[in-house]
Length: 122
Image (cartoon, rainbow, N blue to C red):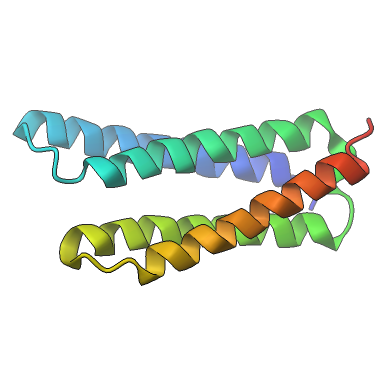
């Protein structure tokens, strides 16, 4: 996936915009009900994905092979689960989707670490 770094940063920027809009909305209403979701969007979404994109950009040898693809999709799907699970938790207290999304993201992070230490020699 030759453009994995750009894909990560593009998604990160979209999430930053969504997080900022949600934060603006909460501020206008003086209602922090969705604070945990806002934090997840900005920190887990924007910050994590931007850092992942930077790592792939700084060490381009990490992009080679199918494992980079797998790592990307584990992270994106896991993040979607974290965000959907955060909304679910706010609405009805359920944590199953959040826990599953977190586990998938952890798997993506472990694979990123493996790619860095195994292939990150630029």
